Image (cartoon, rainbow, N blue to C red; front, side):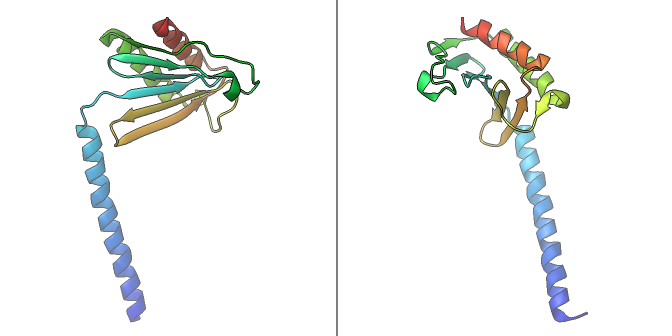
Length: 147
């Protein structure tokens, strides 16, 4: 084998070892993270909901940002929620995240965007189709919680 081939193989092996070690470290850090998740949800009209362990916040879309130019999502709300209410949100989003049949690849009008964050380490994002049962259940719960 030529020197350049040995050098190339050595670099590939070194990078592979480094990638495996750093991957294990990141996985360990994520699994050891005890922070509760933050759930962000954008409904089919672009209204945003942010759910933390203790609060829910509703950030409505304003007419100038809506696709029609007329739609107004209403009044912004931020209020406390109970541990049970947080668990209800978590359960519905967890179920939606594993039901890949309800997911679509691109955000379109009427779809629901879900973002799950745990600190700065872990972030999951998926889009629910406009007609999915999961989307309807999540939106019904979130609307109930902000009333």
